Amino acid sequence: MKKGERQSFPQSNGYAWLYVYGFVHPWSGRCDLLRFDSVDVASFNAALKLFKARVDLDNEAHIVLYVDNAGWHRSKKVVCPEGIELMFGLPPILRRWS
Image (cartoon, rainbow, N blue to C red; front, side, top):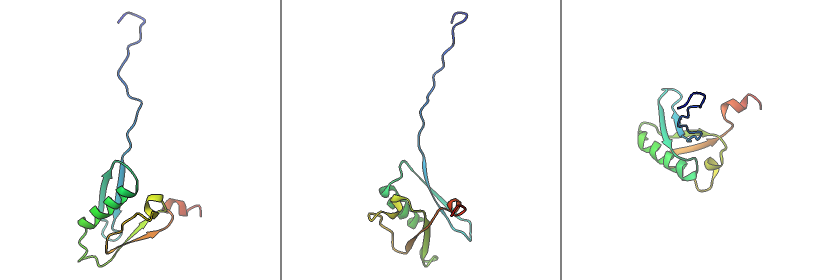
């Protein structure tokens, strides 16, 4: 490199999305996190299925999952496993402004 020339460095201005589905048990604090490459109905269905496989439904008679009103949560294509019920509402942060 000659004096006065700018040195160039390899760089990337791009980014990659990472989607994490989180399930938290409010009394025990147990947290399950599942990483996916996209957010859509197929991923949500897969997350529900994996979550059910991780939870002992004999110990938990009925599970209520509180979700927001995202399109992939409300779709008619959502397959909710037996023993799991979805409840819809505003995300906690949005309740401050309602």
